[in-house]
Structures are given as structure tokens and as C-alpha cells.
Image 1 (tube, one colour):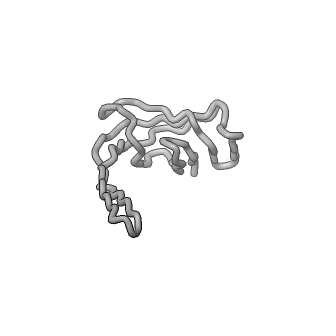
Image 2 (image 1 turned 135 degrees about the vertical axis):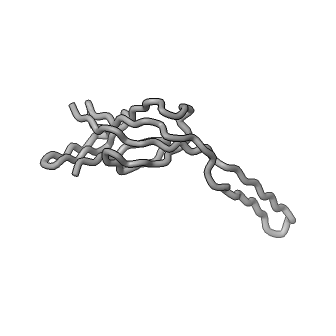
Image 3 (image 1 turned 90 degrees about the horizontal axis):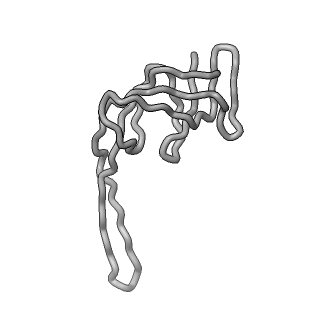
Length: 105
């Protein structure tokens, strides 16, 4: 099984060909192509390449499936004995991508 670990939006994701994953907003439209260049690890049937910090010549090609808003995140601030309470919330934009191909030169 061929898989890779990519860095996207400050988070690491383990992906294989054909996987669908949700990452932070990429500001792309549906059916656009995107390439993850920050590949930290590539594992093939017999080979294993570990990056320092990234694997040179490795990339992961993907296509954008959809862009939507995620679930609401609630942020609460509170200070004891001062009667200070503040509650805010927001919905982050999430991009869904489908991994097409893992390339290692």
C-alpha cells in the first residue's frame, strides 16, 4: 500500500491514493487541481523515504471536491471575581480534496 504524510494548514495528514480529506481553506473552486509540496513521508511497497524536514522531489496531486463551512467552534473567555464573560463563535471554511496521485522522483 502506497501512502504519504503531507503538511497542510499546519496539520499533518496521512493520505493514500483515492482518499478524500478535509483541510483548512485553500481558496480554490470545485474541480481545481492542487498539489501538496510539503510531503514529510512517502511509503511504497518496498521503499520508505523520510524527509528532513520534507522529501525532495515528492508531491501529492489532488482535486478540490467542495468548499463549505465546518461546524461551529465556541470560544469562551472568563475571569473569576470580575464579572467578565465573553462568548464568541465562528464556523471555519473547510475544503474537501480527493487525492489523485502520490509522486516520488
